[in-house]
Figure 1 (cartoon, rainbow, N blue to C red):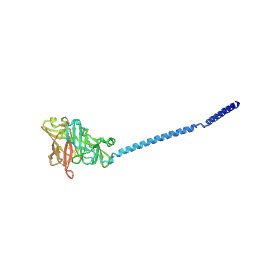
Figure 2: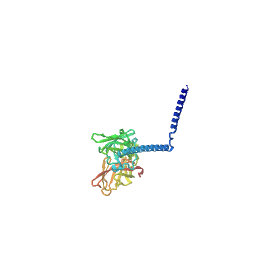
Figure 3: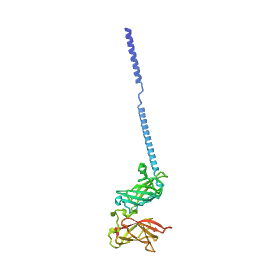
Length: 328
């Protein structure tokens, strides 16, 4: 019995010594150095910043590539011929509500000689207008009513494809917001595979007078002038801008007919054309003088003057505007 007690006590002492040894080992482990901990945290922060900076740089590079890709898809100014101004000072936008419904031939001006519209037909239906433009070439796959930059960001179903007519020419049907107003129109080149920005303008002065609603046209008859002679201010637009006409000029009213005397600043015009009818000069010496009918006041009236000042005679398109408020 005594031996058993001794053995039990020895076992307990052994266990206690072993437990104390383990505790001593645990307590002897070195404590973390605060400076080392701070250093590790700083390194982690710097690593996180570098990773964030790398992600930002990669995003910037991606954005630049995308911008560069968009820019390369749009022709620069250096890629294009000289831009011509299509809007004239006298022009005021004309919308569908000023026109009678119907289909009319219309002239379309272009800011680029490389984007030539040979002919066009304007369709007026209610408050909407569209035009079918027949091109002078086949170099463009699509049109887009807007800028090249806008076209790049648009979906393909917003592009206007060409339709080949019976004569093999390419035609495009485009919406028309207003006449006598510059409209951005970009064209996608088959050869260059780039969008080329243009400005086009549908000219109201090329429409027949019957296309306009009655309250928009001031005819001689509407002025109610008594028969006799008057003077009126007249301005000439078109051509190179160097030629002018004498103003004020004489007009003669006889019933519903109104005849204007047009004196050019040059002796080199051998005939004029008004609404398809040719008029010859009434003088043989000095600057060219004509008597022509006034079809409309206060709006551009299209005429043609044939000049012999060049190596060969040339017909030049002009417009005359007679200001009814100046009639005396």
